[in-house]
Amino acid sequence: MTTEAHALSQLKALVAHGPRFHGTETMAAAAAWLESELVAMGHSVRREPVSLPGWHPGTVRRVRVTAPVDRVLPAWPMLWSAGTGAASVDGVVRGRLEVLGPEGIWGDSIVWQRFGVRDEAGRIAAVVHARDDGPAAPQPLPAGSDDRIAHLAVGHLDGLQLAEWVADHDDVRIEVELDSEPRERSVSDNLIVEVPGSGPVQAGTVVACGHLDSFYNTLGAYDNGSGSIALLELARIWVSEPPTRPVRIVWFTAEEWHLLGSRHHVEQLTDADRDAIDFVLNIDGLGRGDLLETFVGPERFGFAVRDAVRAHAAATARTLTTVDRFPPTRGTDDASFHAAGIPSVFLTFNDLHRLHQPEDLPDPGIARNIAWTVPLARSIVETMPRPRRTAAPGLL
Ligand SMILES: [Zn+2]
Image (tube, rainbow, N blue to C red; front, side):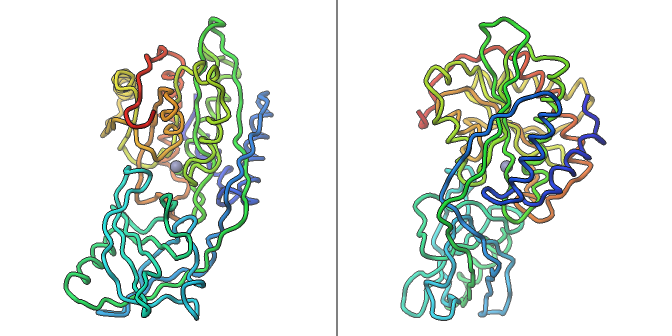
């Protein structure tokens, strides 16, 4: 059994290494710690290197409105954003703000608003992104974004204020400064543990996964230290009580970089490997509250997972607000499997005021949800029959 106190101490030990941003030394240190914990349990760990176009967030980041009022807005560089150095003489882009329109993040999983900064030469020389809800938080830039100009994210309310100023004044002035820059390549590893099953040899495999990496600006206790520790707890339980079917546990890197860790993993699989996977359970973000979201595909499999969640909540006298979203969105690692036609479950206690924030720190509420989720995840992995596969509309 996983106690809340044990989950909290493990979570603190994981995040003590620093932000787990893909390609960094602190990410490597956290992965080494995780590997040593698994080896001490008796597991062997396979590493799968993931190399991708690198990027450094820099240290200067500023969005300042200078008219109709003077106000600095909290802002974060979007992942892969260029700095402002190339688009201006002194490194600061100044101009007039205009509304560009909506922007799909992670496909159309969430919809933000975009604003352009038009400089004296009449060019759009920077983009300000406003979040759909909550404080300013960075996300990776959508594919096709202009890689020569700066892109900064501000919070939801600041976005509404900007839109109102633009509607009321024809000359909203803004300054943007950013020193983010690309790096040629950046490498971290997926960590993989194969747990043999105690049941019939012909049983398929379940992949239980979560991402180990975090955004650059956070220790990522909830996103996704929590899921990483839940998987570590499952690995510990399955040493003394082997699962009924083989389980592959994977801690992915680069989830925050367009799912490139899990996409790389799925690309390496043969058709036979993919067919041998009964389904994937992705645990990403066990935040502090009582809002449990599940995204499951195919639909019939979602009904079975819904019943399993309800039964576990009833058995533990837990009152939850649940959201079952269908079809699954494209913002987490299960999407890499779903796109390949593999049935998938995504579980999260959503905590949008901590998502990609420096305040995403270890918390008893997170530990509580890790301890609550581990037996649910174990039951889903060990008891769910292989779902019937159907084509995923628009993804296959
Ligand atoms: Zn995450």
